[in-house]
Picture 1 (tube, rainbow, N blue to C red):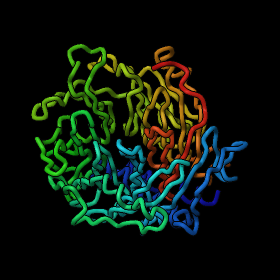
Picture 2 (spheres, helix red, strand yellow):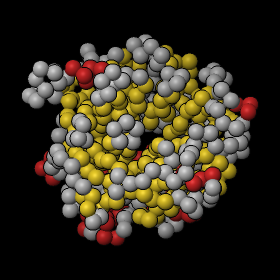
Picture 3 (cartoon, rainbow, N blue to C red):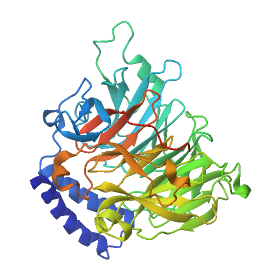
Picture 4 (cartoon, rainbow, N blue to C red):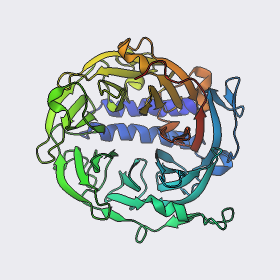
Amino acid sequence: MKVTSVVAAAAFGASAVLAGESGASKMEEVMELKIKQWDAAKAAGLFGGSKLYQKIFNVRPCTKGKVNGEYGCNKVNLHGFLSHEDLGSSTFVGNDVWGWTDKKSGREFGIVGQTDGVGFVEILANGRLEYLGRLDTQTTATSWRDIKVIGNHAYIGAESDNHGLQIFDLTKLLEVKPWWNPFFFKPKVFSKETDLTALYTGFGASHNIVAHEETKFIYAVGGRSGANARNTPCAGGMFVVDVSNPAKPTSPGCIPQDGYVHDAQCVIYKGPTTKYKGKEICFNFNEDTLTVMDVTNKTAPIVVSTTPYEGNAYSHQGWLIDADQSWLLLDDELDEQRRVGPAADGRTTTYIFNVANLESPINTGIYKSPAKSIDHNQYVVDGLTYQANYGSGLRIVDVSSVKVDPTGGKFEEVGFFDCHPEDDDVNGVTEFIGTWSVYPYFKSGYILLNSIERGIYSLKYTGRKAQYKI
């Protein structure tokens, strides 16, 4: 526990910064806290590239609770691994991850976020990962980079000053490895000057990228201008970009009505609140609330509701559970570390909301993980939520019982893969180290999990399906 105790000491010092009167926005304070913990982890030797974390090219099954004799697991096998150095990064630090499938060939690709850009990998038939190339950051390196995909294009934003939105045609990946010479090729470093479909510079830095595939809109959230935090006309809210023509993105403006937006999920609404059927509704995670927005009219968006909840420390991200759009999960990024509300014991806590009435959502219950860890990103597929929970890694939870028991009493963890074994002997610690995000949408069933300090994992869940139809 030498490593984790060093990081914990740094976390304690940074907590005092969070509590102080710094004048910075809440987001800047959270970022400062994370940077202090990452610096401590680097000093403790957790960031070491390919020499520390070696490639894995064949399946390593989950046997007696372990993969490869190292990673804790349950019903999740490891099929491939590449370190951030293997993906061409010079900083060896990861963050977000997203995926793309070529509809014609069925080939599956991952876009792996790193502090200095993104690495592109292909997921082969056996789950092995193959590095194809990379696209460097548009300006400077940053720990916060976010990627989403609409159609055949990746949209990449970052907290780097003046970064803007990189728009990259993913079909370029199809030609990196020529069919006549598939085994001997050099990964390609794509040019920021000549290989982008477009670079949108209507905004500079952003914290997250939200993509609405149905309407072909990108919402860059948590934006700022220079070092002056979120003091912009958009107030850190949703900067709207129309990417119906990826080569010529335009913006109808921004949505500052509820201030800073950390993340969101946007849908064409088909739920039970009749007056909003067919509208474009965004479920926003706005630091201290779940905020529902009607963004159908981009020049006159409407705040439908703002809902706080007991235990709030930092409303971070979440996802709808069901096809009826009546139930939603929310993860709070600071409640476990600050030991507030239901998360006072440090176990990862997920908040359950009934959003059947968009104008009055209700927090009906919680789900608590068996492990202590901070939650970060989660996505729901067919009644299972795939959670990227920092130090406890990938956690797969059956949430399909929500209509039977809205309190979460029947929620059940059905699988996991712990990519940060350093804290296993104490059942986890509440620190910002381990995994950043997960991509669970490939038809093949392979799952991408991006680790901050290690690299990208290709995993496959072997457990049961959701208990209830959702």
